[in-house]
Amino acid sequence: MEDVTNAIETHGLVKRFGKTTALAGVDLTARTGSVLGLLGPNGAGKTTAVRILATLLRPDAGSAAVCGHDVVRDAHRVRQLTGLTGQYASVDEGLSGTNNLIMIGRLLGVGRRAARARAAELLGRFELTDAAGRPAKTYSGGMRRRLDLAASLVGRPRVLYLDEPTTGLDPHSRNEVWAMIRGLVADGTTVLLTTQYLEEADQLAHDIAVIDRGSVIATGTPDELKASAGRQVLEVTPASRADLAATAELLERLIGTAPAVAVESGEVSVQVEGGKALREILRALDDQSIELAEFALRRASLDEVFLALTGHRPEAEAQPSAGRARAAGNVPERSPR
Amino acid sequence: MTSPVSAPVLSRRPSPVAAVANSFTLAWRSVLKIKTNPEDLFGLLLQPIMYLILFTYVFGGAISGGTHRYLQFSLPGILVLSVVFATMGTGMMLSQDIATGVFDRFRALPIVRWAPLAGAILGDLVRYVISIGITLGFGVVLGFRFQTSAAAVTAGCLLLVAFSFAMCWMSALLGVIVKSAQGVQLYGFLFMFPLVFGSNILTASNTMPGWLQAFVKVNPVTYLTDAERALLTGGPAATAVERSLLWAAGIFVVFAPLAVAAYRRRTA
Image (cartoon, rainbow over the protein chains, first blue to last red):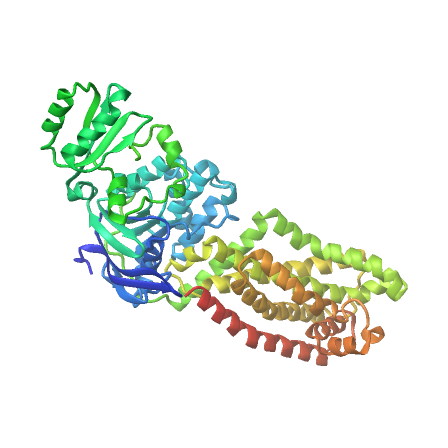
């Protein structure tokens, strides 16, 4: 098993709950030592996939292997290699941070003293030393998530599943969790990260699988996905609002698709293929004496890629902190349209 | 940080020794929770005291014409009542663990699947022992006197633990089936109130209507109370002890497999 190159491999994974098909034949591959981002909206099947890989659910069809070990036939071995943090695995709120970690160490067969030392080490690393003796129910959301992460690391897993590790966290806590994930990956841990935050996948993942309604609809690196179909977005902001309609008309005539007009910001934007039409557009704008405040070409955001792939936006209500994150300036600016 | 260990030695399946050790670790966890959860601790400590004071002084004069005489009669019954109610804790804890995802964490670990269940039940045996100790101790403070040998009293305590061990599988079944801890409490009390109070724990059954007497006569709580009275205050104990043990065995044989099956289904 040492020469297995992929830490995670699934083939044709199917899972049904009654009449609902949660997974409709999912193939996933995570290279050893990389971060695979599983990106999709609520109910896409991300958690189901993680639960199968964590041996909590049996697939109805297909196969899944972790470091070459089948998750059904060899579940006990898989459990020795993996750690799970997420929406559904949790810490014991009635126990202190220290005792939560000692308990897991003891369950993993670590001696009393070594379990205590490991707990102290992890609590220190996750900046929980001050709260180590307090029951976990007194922790803030960010602290609990960090304890949860620490709990999944007690056994030094080679493969770590992070099921929406930052959902509901404020931007500061989220950045901390991101930094910790980067640290783990630097140490050689393979990470399967599910998220509905596009920027999270963009920031952390080496490879992304976009999943929607139980199927993988696209795979690739973040850059590949963003460059897929050669999509780029041209943004034109005329200096005067009076020229907005004329600008939109001109772009539609030259590019052939109706641009989006953001009246409040006075911006006209449209997807273009490559940059060859730009000179023509600039000349035409000049001919009509439209003065420009801004003229920019940028790559499509993952948001737009997701929209193009799935036909719908990732559910906005499921991103409670996204608005605040943007307001705080922690997230690269996007232009929603 | 230390790097992930390269090429760990993986075992094919959990060893029996590890399984027992895991169960004890999880039992340690539930005992620790009693200590760190003030409500739980107070409930465990104060409930028997409350029952003793209330029942002895409210009913004592009316039923036995004196609190001291009544205490000699009622203490074994209150002992049974406290312990039987304490078995609800097992189900509530299981239900809570499943709802909060703590169980998923356990199941994702390389431990045997039944360890969390065994741990919860082992840990609860400690609760029963505490409950028995408080009831006996405070009973003595109020004036209860043992009228038998130390061996008989010890046997009485062991019988209580054995019976509650059987009962807690019913509680465990409820905990695995019912979605919330509050639900477990509700159904548990709906079931346990008639079982506990439809017995001879607080009064002799001869003033009750015939249909109720019929129920009291077959109620396992009645046998257990008879056995405890005999073991603590004297009288023939053999039949009652035997019947109590038979009931405990019966409850265990029926409900332990049901609880385990429901647990397996819930955690499959």
